[in-house]
Length: 226
Ligand code: SAM
Image (cartoon, rainbow, N blue to C red; front, side):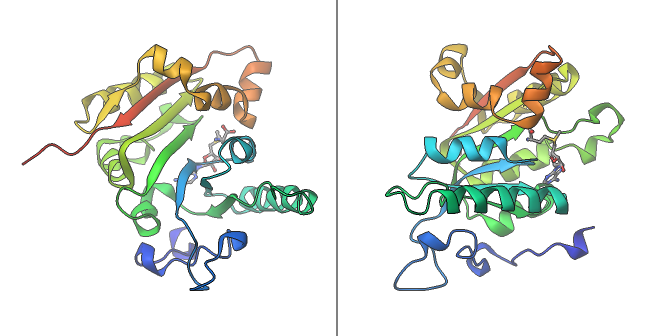
């Protein structure tokens, strides 16, 4: 439970260098040369993370996963990929990492306001129907937190095989004043959409079972002027 989770009081207190050692600043050994800008929420076994890493070599990409053993699996997976690529000039996979955490509770402890460019929610809430509303990963309250950590123009990507959950996420994102849905054309032009359709372990399982995948992507709008 949460009292066993490690989280900083505020983003300034977070030591990111243990996740991205190759990006440690030479001036301040506790700081990175640049912040994390892509987050995979509930990353599971890390399939999306390892596909995004070479696609976005200039971004730092962080997975968050609540299950200890799954997080450790992804850690090992990334370490292995890093060491296989160490001798190569481009040093692949140094820009991706994973941490254990509860994304429904502590995101603003880790990320500054307007820090993130992209947030992924891939096949969240498999037990959607049995969950109480408050326990869902997309709610009005949580959307306001996601809007807080996303920069203007940043994008939330959602995908699920559960139609009821898709409709729930669309309803809440449509209703929220700080989000606007991408058009089908915009989705088609965004490499992340294609990637999240096929990269994750859950998505691959759905494909094997010939299930449907429902996508909805939303842009973070600027705060309205007061
Ligand atoms: N995104 C991955 C994929 O598509 O393969 C995993 C999908 S899996 C069905 C949902 C994942 O979200 C699980 O690994 C679960 O442990 C994780 N999860 C659930 N609630 C979470 C939370 N509050 N914070 C972080 N991870 C969470």
